[in-house]
Amino acid sequence: MIYVRILSDFLFFFFALFAITSTFSIAVAQIALGVSLLLYLIILYLKKEFRLSGHLKLFYISIGLYIFWMVLASLFSEAPLKSFLSLKEEWLFCAIPIGIYLLQKESFRTKIFISFAVAVCLVSLYGIAQHFSGIYWFKKTPPVAAFDYGYMVKGFFPHRLTFGNYFATASMFLLGYLAVSWKSLSSAWRLFLFVDILLAVIVTFFSYSYGPMLTIVGTVFVFGLIQFRKYTLYLLAFILISGPSILVLNESLVERITNRIQVEMDITDEASRIYIWDNALKMTIDNPVFGIGQGNFYPQFEKNMPDHRIHVHAHNDFINFAAIAGIPGFIFYTFMWGLILKLMYRGWRKNKYLAEQRGFLAAGFLGATAFFITSLTEATFADEEVRQMLMFVWAFGLFALASKANIERN
Image (cartoon, rainbow, N blue to C red; front, side, top):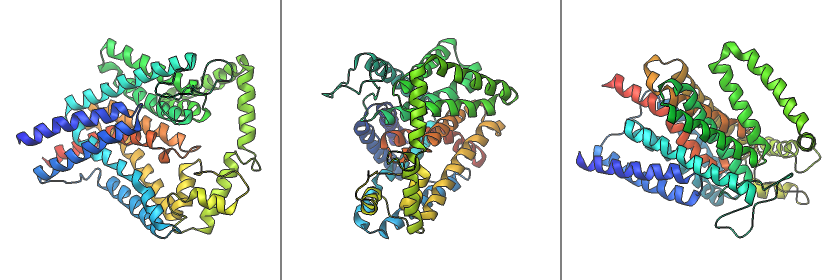
């Protein structure tokens, strides 16, 4: 149908715009995604078909269970209307089927990936300039000064941790594609992606956020274990030797990391993760079935500890969901994550029919792994800037599985 083809072209434009602008503007990105959703629904209506593939059906069911329980937990909270309205971020899941639909077409897939890679490169260059000069376009005040020299990079985002988590995830997403598709890429494309990844890693470290830094190290180690299993001992030896060597060369860094670890492990320090997790788990024990409801973490914390430092979330996605949605919410969220990682891993490593798409599957898996690691010390799923990019990453990690199902059906 000519109308579907024209609408698909417009859908490609706005979804690519969503991917590009997610690197620097949550507002523009979500407007682009909103237009994409409208176009996608019109296309579905015109085609008069929407069949969930057998490969992804369970994944979509897991999302449905997660959303259903989040709604139920909100309705049983002390402030049901406020809690229900706080679920507005769940609409970002719509980016997954939209992306999967578009990525079936090779030209769309290539252009969207290149557009995102270029956007990451440009914002990384801006981040490096920000570190050395303190520029912060569209804002009146400069970023916070770094410990030794320059400024803590936060790009166009409101917080450096958000920036660090975003670019740690983005760099690992690009790394997965480059490493697995290396032989099939031109030398120019290899060089660009290598430089792009290097720039993204550099600005992640320039954010001076320890979680994203450790995320990069952890994700690279996971990738090494999977892709180069027989060299695992060499990789581990390299990390054990190079890590302490770098620290020895920078005494101030050693001191900062040591002090940070001491703070995070001190349950009496109200800024520590242990303190926050302990109190979040108490909320779960007091509300084991439905939790306290989305959007109620801060007031519940303030209610229980009015004279102490108040936090807006649990600084760990899994503990956070246990607190706001109870044990069932924690189970549904964990199940969704386990399933997505399993699907992408098996598609990347086990499915011989998906050799041509293996680079994208690896990209999706490594990007998702990086986000997963960030969520162990931060409630990254509650951070819209990073979460909207995760939906894009998941789409790249899943589209090939939907394509394989279509091949089998036809």
